[in-house]
Image 1 (cartoon, rainbow, N blue to C red):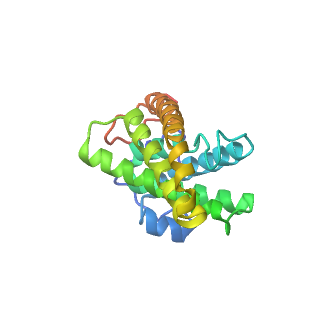
Image 2: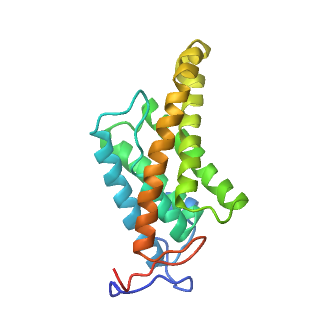
Image 3: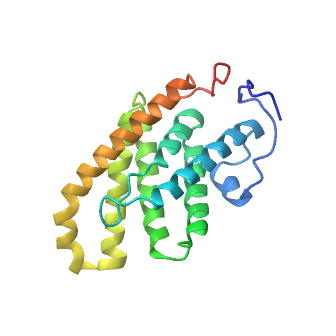
Length: 208
């Protein structure tokens, strides 16, 4: 392993990180080994945040503050969209296996929310290239809860649950906006600490 002051560079050679190779192969492709190592650190931290959050009381049905999304944002602004997808998939699948929710509706909600958030991240950076962590976090948080509520209506409650969902929707959106703001601000602080400048720049670890 290289010295901690090593800075991942695009020209590094090596195979993708070995844990969950199928997921990494699909989501990240054959990325440089050192780059994958830092992405793996972010994925591990996201899993820890996911497990911590699972032990905390929720803000309502199907709603959590999404602390693990902070790590997804860091991966996104440091290594790109594919890295964010990889961190998210690893976090959801590993967290579900640990918590025993892998074959339950919970993982469907997690995957649907993640899909909405990741799609929002990609579209935001394509349409608004100068958008920072806070703006991206706000939009992805709103997309996350919207996608989850759509899945709840389609797969769990059916049309009969739509009036209740519409009644709760403003509260969900406000709560998502607040948590998205918080997560984006924390992600911005982390990125600033490692001197990462968007839209794209490798980690600077010399001063860490």
